[in-house]
Amino acid sequence: MRVSKARVYKSNKSISKTGKVSWRPRYAVYDVEGNKQVKFGSAQSTLKEANLEAKRLVDELLTRESLQLVATDEAMTVGEFAEVYWLKADRQISVRNSSRIKTSMKYWKEIGLWDIKLEDLTTAMMYKFIKNLSDRGLQPATIQKYKTELRTLLDLARTLGQIDRNVLTGVKNERRTQEQFDNEDRIYEDIRKNTWTLEEITTNLEKLRNMPREIIEVAPKNKSAYTQERSPTPKVPEILWYGRFLIGFHLGLRTGEIHALKFSDFDLDSRQVLINKSMAHVQVTNANGEYLGYTQQEGRIKSSSHRVQMLTDEVIEFVKELALVLDMLGVYKEDQYLFVNNRGFLLDIGYFRKAGIRIQKHCGIKDPLASPKYTRHSSATVLASLGWSSVDIANHLGHKNDRVTRQYYIKDNIELKKKMANEFNKKMDG
Picture 1 (spheres, rainbow, N blue to C red):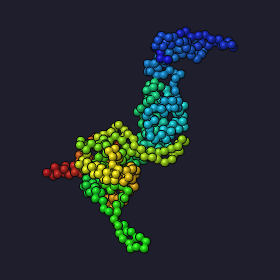
Picture 2 (picture 1 turned 135 degrees about the vertical axis):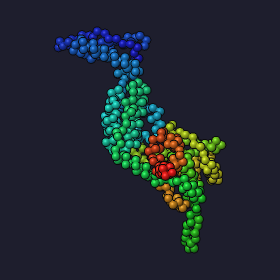
Picture 3 (picture 1 turned 90 degrees about the horizontal axis):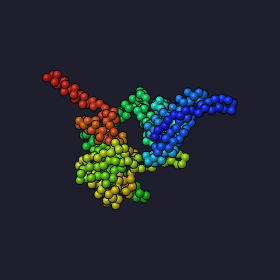
Picture 4 (picture 1 turned 120 degrees about the vertical axis):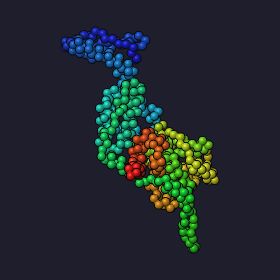
């Protein structure tokens, strides 16, 4: 019932069978059409207390109405709202990893959040919610996933008038521990050691482009042994190895974004490619939530990572040549993925990582990257050395802002600082 106004009436006197006197708060509400409805509150010991209670009830009702909140008797708990509205929302239905949602709901039940009314949630509760996750030893990324699920529920509850604000907004993890700082340093060191210079990129791409044949010895029964040349990647077009590293270096794409590329994403005349989707491993569970394995699915990336990349001559030539190779194999079509095997089936996103070291060494690369994912990191560090700003590099990589770019990719350019120091020394000596 949408209330247009409400007013307090004189409370009713009531005498029980035992002779005890009490007073029931009485008030009236009027809907938008002017229809009147008299309501009563819980019994109070005095007339004054009853009238005050009636006024409190009326004030609360009018406050709810001004905030466009549902009536008290329509207020829901976290669990009720999750089952009735949240799970049926478009955003939740489209989430590929449904087991993550089930895990979050199980945790809400475990800590008692499930049975708390949405309107009773407080910011203090949210801080305790985050602290409890931290105390369990969960990684920051995992904690963020739990927060995301609860935040989407509270955002929807606010939209549907259950609450007037999202109490999780602004609630952050506690100050990072020394262990987390050490872990960040480890990640940075890992990135720094697994990057190539611009000169190494040019040299090693040429080696991948001209992948040597593999020499094997064949020894048939009752016949003389002989040597034979064959492709080191017999089920996959060799050119894809050059392409995987080339696109990683030149466009700075994530592994999932590279595997989701289709020929239809490229506009070679305008020298552009649209990046708006990614390939990922998605867990498969049964009705009981038990893990059965994984499947590979394409999904949309975050809107903040949507971008159009300009193509270099090398990338354009690669796309054209790959189209010819796949056409000769009889598997080319306009909406075909780039990274497929000889039969046209999409490669697993772990393919280049698993065989990465072997293929790089086979091509004569002295310092092979531990994983092709580091082509993205090399792209960022090279651009930083060429004078690009952290904001420009963040846009190039598809980062929401340049914090991650500065933290991991271009932390401190020691060589640049040395160069600056030498320049100062020259001026002082002069």
